[in-house]
Amino acid sequence: MKKLPFLLFSFFSLSALAQSDAIRTSIAKKADALQPKLVAWRRDFHEHPELGNRETRTSAIIAKHLESLGIEVKTGVATTGVVGILKGGKPGPVVALRADMDGLPVTERVNIPFASKVTTQYNGQDVGVMHACGHDSHMAILMGVAEILSAMKKDLHGTVKFIFQPAEEGTPRGEKGGAEEMVKQGVLENPKVDVIFGLHINSAIEVGKITYRPGGTMAGVSDMRIIVKGKSSHGAYPWQSIDPIVVSAQIINNLQTVVSRNVDVTENPAVVTVGVIKGGTRFNIIPENVEMLGTLRYFTAGDEKLVTENVRRIAIKTAEAQGATAEVKIPFSNHYPVTFNDIALTAKMLPTLQASAGKENVMLRPPVTGAEDFSFFQEKVPGLFFFLGGMPKGTNPAIAPSHHTPDFYLDESGFGLGVKALCNLTLDYMASK
Image 1 (cartoon, rainbow, N blue to C red):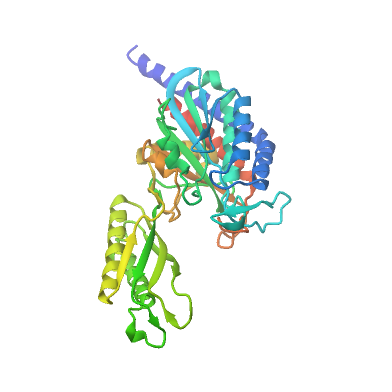
Image 2 (image 1 turned 90 degrees about the horizontal axis):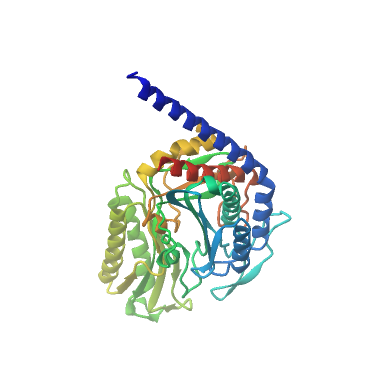
């Protein structure tokens, strides 16, 4: 008789495990059955991309789909965002799931029937528009998750908040948007979100695989502007000038020491890149000013402070040494925090990812120096952001077309795994509470 409580505990634990496996199997079958819809949604979004804060057609399709599932829908969040709230039949936590919606000012080169032919204006320039980062697939996947979970509404132990976010890639000059603006407008409140999950498809990860990293997984980013002010002169008499072009070249060279000599690269990587340098109007005139634009990347708050302070000091002091001045603004127009996967949450949910894809298909990855504004959500609530394979099997990752390029390409057969993973993360997290 003394062993009965333990036996009962074992029995109920095994029953719960069996039930979980049964639900997982059911979700897998439903996700596989949804594959034609996932592909159709993705191709429609791909053929009709919209830039950040302009996703009106996109958000209307998403809102209509969520409403058809009986999900409470709010539109116009952070300009064009859509938020769906699915209240389960049983009490429990609030789980948020996020997909981004915007395309990029890229002209597509891929020879596919649903290639984008859309053109528009971006910051005063005529540009093509393309889903060159996979946001079309993210939306399709989350729409599939909503369809599956809404059919389980009465059995859900909690609430699911579906966040379809505009402007992840940024907004046109002078506008606000993206995850930061959604947070400011209360997307994580009413009801208050307990945890958030998100994924990003990757064209250099083989389809069927998932990669993840606890802690800093994608870099924090600040852009910078440095204006070097010197003294103009005729190009034939450089001794009469304080040449801001020469000073700028010295600043660029000296900035290379920030990563190589200031950052402890055994702990965290960092990046200092000058991507734009503008100065002068004619070959024989030394200009008065030079403007430089660049990006800083880092993986901890401490490294952000270190990199920022050293860039500012080097630019100002290098200019002073030559009799010039340097004005440094960091950040200049945007700043994303580090995409930081809550360590305890990542460890807790890793078995779910492994059960979704197969343990052999879930791999730890190194830090990514790209940035993601999913980080604004993670600043407020624990979050897990992982990567989903979108590269055709057998492709060499080194030659797979990169994100943000005209040749970006995805294998659509991996979308179902994204649906399974997000559904299972939601249900397993709810079960754990």
